[in-house]
Amino acid sequence: MAGDAAAAVGIEPRVGGLSVVHHLSVAWIALGSNLGQPDQHVRQAFASLADIPGVQLLARSNLYRSAPVGGPPGQADFCNAAAAVATMLSPFELLTAQNAIEAEHGRERVQRNGPRTLDLDIISFDSLRMTTQRLTLPHPRAARRAFVLLPLAEISPALSLGRAGRVIDLCRELDARDMEHW
Ligand code: AMP
Image 1 (cartoon, rainbow, N blue to C red):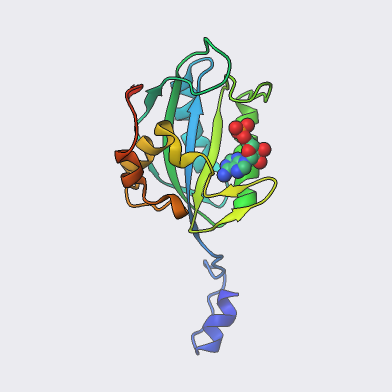
Image 2: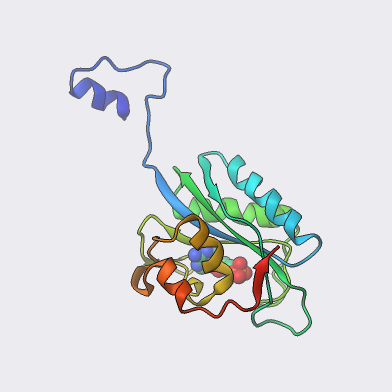
């Protein structure tokens, strides 16, 4: 408790102020949509992320248009973007909150890589590395995806995606011909 820490060093603990400070992390989130009005879903998602208790939006990228990768033929182009947040949540709590936002946007998981109203992925969370059934960090496919890396490079070029290296270096190796500003 922050109050205990203050008392331990001889400072009068604050009463009623911001006396409890949890561990603060920085997370990087990729946003994508290709159903309905994709840009509207992405713009609203920025606001929804900022509304999660314990989350503060630090940065948001511009919106990009990208051709779909994999999935069924003929699906619409995606609108993609990236966000940086400061959060007191754990990675699992953040993922749960993101899944709730996806659900609010009518997200249905019908088909792998299929069309979606909103997709929110955690690309990186501090410098955590973890592989669990529910969450892999850094995101295992981010380093190969122009639609993740390009928006991310705008807000954090020096971000390191574990062994894959820095976002800016990964961007230099990319084929981003299918991407343009929204
Ligand atoms: P998708 O349907 O493409 O959004 O994939 C979501 C699934 O990937 C969920 O079951 C998540 O639990 C899992 N997952 C694993 N790692 C991540 C991550 N870094 N960010 C978001 N979802 C993840």
